Amino acid sequence: MNAFGRVFRMQIFGESHGASVGLVIDGCPAGLPLSQEDFLKDIERRKGGIQKGTTPRKEDDLPIFKSGIFNGKTTGAPIAIFFENNNTKSQDYEKHRAVPRPGHADFTAHHKYGGHEDFRGGGHFSGRLTVCLVAAGVIAKKLLSQHQIQVQANIESIAGEPDIEAGLQKAIAAKDSVGGIVSCRTSGLPIGLGEHFFDSVESLISHAVFAIPAVKGIEFGAGFAAATMFGTEHNDAIMDATGKTKTNHSGGVVGGITNGNDLFYRIVVKPTSSTPKEQSSLNWETNEVEKFSIKGRHDLCIALRVPVVLEAVTAMVLTDLMLLEQKMKRTI
Image 1 (tube, rainbow, N blue to C red):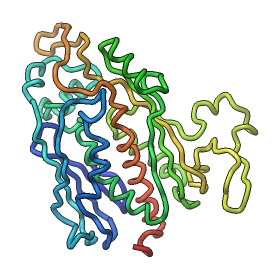
Image 2 (tube, rainbow, N blue to C red):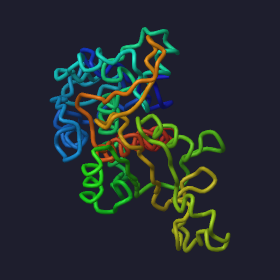
Image 3 (tube, rainbow, N blue to C red):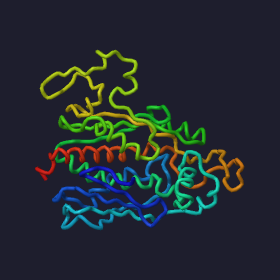
Image 4 (cartoon, rainbow, N blue to C red):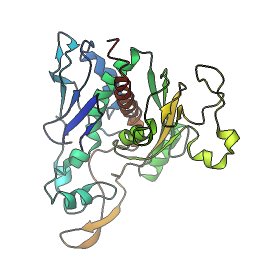
């Protein structure tokens, strides 16, 4: 439920407005140099209040190591990391408890957990917990880099506009939120990662990607465009013994297994559900539909903060697969 991976396995905990959020990573090889400084760059990329169009809520998000690191290196024991929540405004959510916000988990969580869920800021459903994914990704990317494997995600468009500023202006003009498309490319992968059917590379990455709140779609390589192509056009011709192909319509995966080319995929990020524009929803106390607007501090476009999270979950999956192949344990 709240854990992912088989060898490199991570579990997240905490709520948006609780005392802290955090993670535990099991299966990280011993001897990996790791310090607070290693986390700062990626954590800064994820933060709100840094980029135009993101939430003004700011947290220091300095990782607090509780176990698994000694003398600046991983010990092989589980690594526990906490991130404190110090900048919360829970009263913004108390006032609208009886009116579930469209697009959020308020209604489904209320029914599933009988009203016992922590609803403040979305609780355990909140994008706040993606800081935990980013932290796991920092460790995973550091392990992958020892094998010259690099993961890089980029925003391709906002509100249908390749120009990010133009996309944000659409949202500002409409006084509403917008979505976007983010791509991710991994280079340097060996041939052979992944398994048949349920543990294919696409299956595992898709599973991890959909754990990121607001992700609504994914495509690998040519993706949906493949539906308009001929087979001879879509097939990637193999050019040499390394597996290099003339094109990469498969996105670097064939039969669920990496083929040595760049792993490439795109995701769709929906518009932020919380928007100041007036909406309607059921008041479950009065059983009447009423109009309301959402107050508080929210992202104009969540996609702006997604690239570093996308890199993180991709690195987590690939690190787990590398460890399953026993390629890392021999070199760390």
